[in-house]
Amino acid sequence: MTQRLVSAVGLSMAPAVVESAPPRRRGPAVRRPLDFYETAPWQVDALVDYLPELEGSVWEPCVGDASLLTRLRERRPTLGPFTTNDIDVAKRADYHLDAARPDAWRAMGQESGRPDWVVTNPAFGRAFDILQHVVGVARFGVVLTVRVSFSEPIRKGGRGPWLARHPPAKRITLERCSFTANGKTDSATTEWLIWANVPLQPPFLISAFGYKPERSPRSSVSNRHAR
Ligand SMILES: C[S@@+](CC[C@H](N)C(=O)[O-])C[C@H]1O[C@@H](n2cnc3c(N)ncnc32)[C@H](O)[C@@H]1O
Image (tube, rainbow, N blue to C red; front, side, top):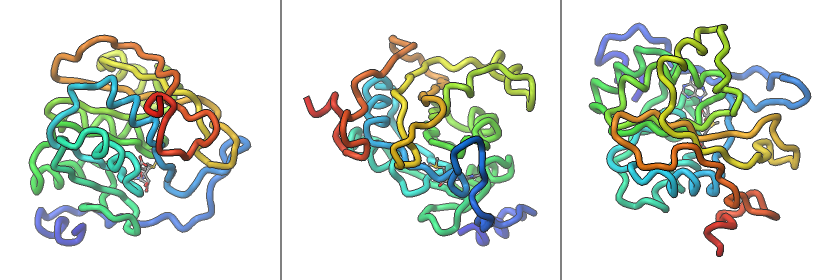
């Protein structure tokens, strides 16, 4: 798909290359190559419960193993159609492009039109690059899960000024979990940040307590939905 797409629109985009270098050390934890971490079902449950406006077509630009999309489909079966991308050619996706590059979004748009929503759990290191492209692409809105530190208005890279001009419309803060599945929690918790071109219902600042399963972090049923 990538090669066909690149030649069809005449892009000089380099084909996606899977990182073969060993995982990088960042602080005490070793991060996985390409920041591949699954989104837990209970995290998606919190999003679905607090974003009733999420309807229509969805692009997932960092689809990975489709953990996020699978739970979204289960919880909101009317959603779709879906278009998927992942830079890792080993992942099953419609496209294998670098979502941090503007030409990737132009190419996907030319072939697949504009989505109603972009929903993703991006590689943390590329989240801001990806976000700046997708806000102009999605018709209704953009939903990202990022570390809470993402909202810190740092000057480096221009994120602070950009966030000041484009504050998210809704924030759903999640309980902290172990993305590494080794029992060690991540250094900060994560949250869903939502930028919308459509009116959203309140509440706008949500502490999503009670979704994380108490004993089995990989369980597909959160406390909230088990009740
Ligand atoms: C945190 S994982 C999320 C996986 C999946 N979306 C989920 O929610 O379970 C991030 C994914 O982004 C992919 N990725 C990393 N950098 C990327 C980039 N520049 N463009 C597109 N995908 C990228 C990785 O291969 C990985 O599958």
